[in-house]
Image (tube, rainbow, N blue to C red):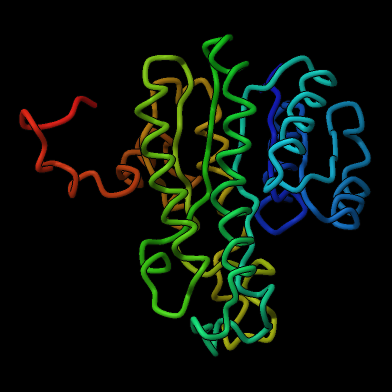
Length: 278
């Protein structure tokens, strides 16, 4: 990835931290965005050898103007934007520590909580895509990777607003993959596949940490999707826990690949003239 510039949101969290490290190791320059200033300070301190290729910026992705500033500053510092990893999100752990064992019902939510989750988890990804798409289209090369969640989690009872916000993100990714098809900009989804060993699963939960998916599982599929080998790969979702980095990448990619979202449900709309154009 020499010469490539990546933006990673949620960079101070479990997935974000390992992705920033992996992209730097692959030779990319990285803008690490997060709302946590202490978290970004810790990230920077853990990567002392990358000052020339690492930009840490406190950014609330729910704020479109903040996203614009982050994209502009990234391009000014590193000369462009090639890769966007929409990883930043709120989990139910921000409501209370026992959210995985004592699920969150609708009466516990407020409109403010609902709106904040949608603003970060869904609108935040749209904001970042919107501010990065122009340079990607202009150079006819770009990678957009959206981190969503398992379909089980999207549809789970008492798992709002997290589940619906990620379902919306998945649908958005499917639409963007079609919109940008043939432009050189690809859009794919990567999910861990189940509960992961990140702060979104509080340490007080009943899960044994050794049974959780390690954040490092996200690295291999995302690094592959950012490579030249994936130039024509778009509109797919990958389950990171099923990706075996020891196997040949082409073989494991085909085994882990599925379409984004639910295209099989969209084949027979009641539509004037039969079916809308893609």
